[in-house]
Image (tube, rainbow, N blue to C red; front, side):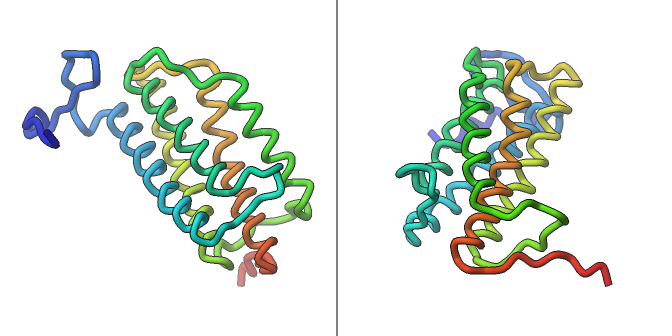
Length: 185
């Protein structure tokens, strides 16, 4: 069944708990932001698959990288909801490794970049912004003691936006599109 009617009065619950909370409270907000990010990464993944965009990290395609992120976001969502599953240090190191590999292919960042260029690059850059918002909501839920996450989860979320930024830049570079800096005029 796709509906239960339990949320009709603006409250929600979490798997394995009888406790009801306002849908406007910090934990449902964090879960909603993570869900939005995961869904939009699915859109990016479909576009990457259609364009058969390959990254240089071994035989790992961009679509595979995005799928890995989606899988990890389900772990984060579980943590925020109260499950015992946790993001591990290994997952943080994997993200850092991909970022390091991408950085070897790109010029160093000297100033902000205007999003755009290749459509997929702009989409991944938008996912980066959603990722930052989701990270802030998870931090807020933790600060308000509505959620408890493992020691590596906030690290993972912080690195995730960096990874998405690196991927956005890489997509434009591999597409032959020069990065544009803001003119501030």
